[in-house]
Length: 152
Image (cartoon, rainbow, N blue to C red; front, side, top):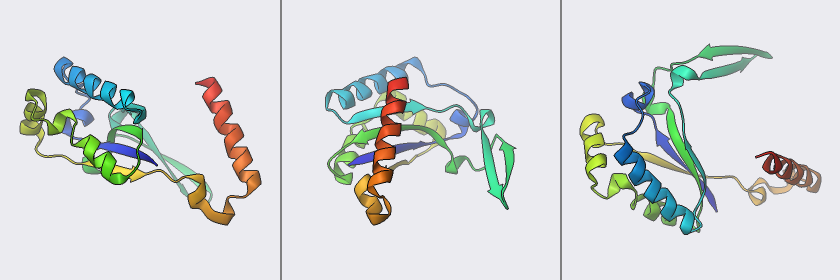
């Protein structure tokens, strides 16, 4: 199963403060471990919401709302896409991250920002869609994924 691991934003990420070199090194080691284990499929950090926008659709019209957005706790600062056997396996991998190992950099971050949460969400797979996902729609989806991968 694939899961998306969602890192929530905080006041520093929303202020555009980039991680320290030490924290980036710890994350690099962790990501390397994930890749070697065949777990990590993708992952990136995201810029602050002040550089983003939301597009609201209502009554057939689109309204653009430029960032920043007020509710930091509802914002995403980064993500991973992992291939795991279960939610429990994803939890075990999270427990091995720099934030859970008692590292000096993670402790500094927690002292500044307090405790934080990392969200795990299962990705919807083709079989989850049932009969509505017709053979024609499956073929179209496979074709589009192949085209997108070729451009990456």
